[in-house]
Structure formats: C-alpha cells, structure tokens
Length: 294
Image (cartoon, rainbow, N blue to C red; front, side, top):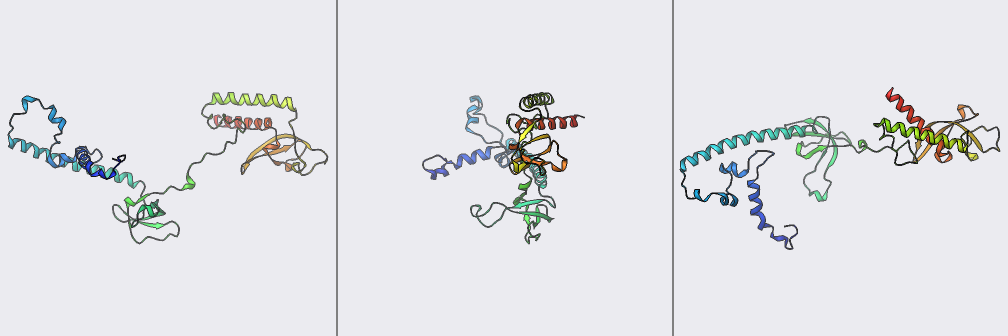
C-alpha cells in the first residue's frame, strides 16, 4: 500500500485489515479474538471450509443444541476475557507506577497543538500529589510552582537527567598503545600480570640504554624554581609522583633529584620521555592490583 503508485487506494485494503484484526487473538488483554467474544466461536475462513471432509458437508445439525453450545461458550469466554483484561490492567498499572511516584521527576506531553508544531515533552516537573488512581498534580522544577490542572498518567514519562548519563572516562594508564586497556584487563589477572611484567622489563631496558639516571631535557622556563646553576638545562628526575589531566593535556608531578619536595613541579607529558611515563603507569597499576587482591 505504501509503495503503490496511487496511494489513494488504501480503502480497498480495509476489509482485509479488519478481518485480520478481528480474527487475531489479543494476547496482551482478553486472550481471545474479537470475533469470538461477539459470536462465541471462531470465524469460518476459506481454509476451514476447504479442509472439511466431503462426507460431512451434507449432514444436518440440531439448531437448539448448537445454539446452547454457542451461548455457553460465549458466556464463559466473556467472563474469562474480563478477568484477563483486569489482570492486564493491573500489570500495566504496576509497570507505570514505577515511574510515577511522589517526588519523581517527570516529563509532560502538552495538549492542544499538533506535535509537529511544538516539543513532544515539556518539563521537568516534580510529582507533588497523587489525586486519583491515574491523576497527578505536578510542580515545576524551575520555579516550584504548582500546575493548576491535574495531569493524567498517560501524559507523563520519567525524566532522565542528561548530567547522569554514563560517559567513558579517558584512559589514564596507556598513552601510546591504544590496543591495551587496563580497565578491561582488571577481570583477567593472568593477562594483566604478563602485560605489566612486559612493560616493566621493556621500560628498564630502554632506561638503561638511554640514560641510567632517567635524565630529561627541559626548557629554562620549565625548570625548578631554584636552580644553583642557571646555565644547566638538563635535570635529573628522581621519580614521578602523580598524574593529572588539565583539559586534553596530561601532566605529571615530578620529584627532581637534588631538590626538596617543595620544588616539585607539574610537567606536561611531552616534556618527559615515554619510557619514564610507561614505567610510572606500570608501577601504579601493579600497586593498585596488589591492594585489590590483598
């Protein structure tokens, strides 16, 4: 119907659509088809007639017994359907009441205008009072004013604060290897141990090759505040103490060899060798793992 060249032919399909609806069992409410609840029996479709044996087509049937059977079936079916509808309504109410309790924050759908001309939901609002079985009085979250007109539950939905949506925190551990995510390896201790050992061994080898004292070159504007030799632009790193992030730049708190802790400085990662940074993160990860298992 939707892909037909002439889309004005939709009334031609209504009979088939209605027949399908009337013959379909309503699994979420009555557990019966609408046709059965009206006539007390299922409809006789063309396929049913085609399957009737030829030997039984000409047999007569007692009209009174057939009518009594239909009435009994219809009475029983409607009674069961009523029970099923009440059970379904209670189920719907239980599910809906989870999001419409006193004090909950909700959205409200406005009425009076086409949804194309306005926002689908307004709010947020607080549920201030439960008036009737499905009616609530709302209070604006912006100015705490109570709305004059009560609102039916079918016009409400639970409000989800965008600030509480989960976000993926930046990876503070591995800067150069995107394939290695220590947070995902926390549940795999054997793999984590092998990764940490590999990083530590590689770092120690690199440090030994480059400089046994873990030296780093810094510009004069990045040097510690008190320097006994102003001409010197190479400073020995005793150890990295902490790591933090300012904007999109990682910084490390450096304890300088030969200087007191009061002269520790925060340095960006591009002022430090990668092997020194990897060694710091590997040791930090190993300490955290021992604390959790200890």
